[in-house]
Image (cartoon, rainbow, N blue to C red):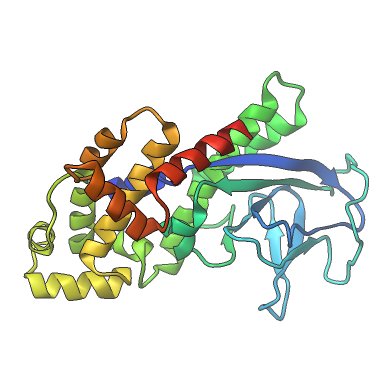
Amino acid sequence: MVTTDVLSSVLRLLRFKASVFFHSSQCGSWTIDTSGSGRSTFHLIASGKGLLHLPDQDEAIPLIKGDLVVFPRDAKHRITDSADSHPESLDEACSSEEATGLICGYFDFENPQRNPIINALPDSVIVQGNGVDVDPSLQILVDLMKFETEGEVIGADVVVDKLSEILFIYAVRSFIAKENPKSGVLAALSDVQISRALDAVHDRPAEAWTVEKMAGMAGQSRAAFSKHFSELMDVPPMQYVGQWRMQLAFTDLREGKKTMLDIAESVGYNSEVSFRKAFKQITGITPGVARKAAQSSVVD
C-alpha cells in the first residue's frame, strides 16, 4: 500500500500547469496526434470511443468513455476513430449521440528533468475510466470536465485547466496501483521500511541526516538499509537526500520570497557558501542562475 504522506510530499514538488487546447465532439473519420510537440500531453475520452495507436504495440488499444491517456514526455502516438482511419486532422464538431467527445491538453512541468516522478513514469500511462478497480471519483471528475467544456459557464476555461491538473495525479495513482513498479521513487512509496525514512527526510529536510539515522527510521541496520535503499531507489541514501533538498531549494529560489541564507538553512546548510557549492554540484548550475532563470520564465 502506498504511504499517502510520502506520495503527497513528492507530488507537492511536482509543480506544473495544465492547459486544455482542444475540446469537442467528433463524428466520422478523425485523428489526433500531438507527437513532436516537445510537451507532456493528455487525451481524455469524455464520451464515445476511439483507438490508441502506439509504435510498440502491434494492435490498437480500444478507448471508451472515461479513459485517460497521459504522455509524461513527448512520445509518438495517434488516436483515431477506427483502425483504418488516416485523416490528417479532426473533422468539424458534431452533436450526434454516437460522437466521440475529446478533451486534450498539455502538462507543463517545472524542471521536469530533475523530477523523480516524471523520470519514473513510462512513455504512456493509460487510465481506464470504467471497470471493477476504477476509482469512482475519476468518473465524477470526467463528468465535471465535460460539463464545464460543453456549457457556457463563466470561468470555465480556468476551471477545466485546474481540473486537468488533477488528471495527472490520477494517472500517477493508477500507474502505481496497476503496474506495482519495482524500482524508483514510485516503488519506494509502497515499501513500508523505505517509505518511513523518506517520510522523515521529506518532512525534516534541514535535519542532519546520516545513513545511520535514516536506517533507524526504517528499522534496519545501516548496511541492510543502504543496500535496500540503493536497490529500490537507484541512488544511495545520502545522494537522494541531497537531490531532495535541492528540489526544495529550487522551488524557494523560484518563488523569490526567501533570502539565500534562509533557503540554505531550510535545507540543512548553515552557510551560503556550503549551500551554493552543494547546489552547483547536484544541479549543475548556481543558485543565482536558477533564481534568474525562474524569474525570467515568470516574466515571459
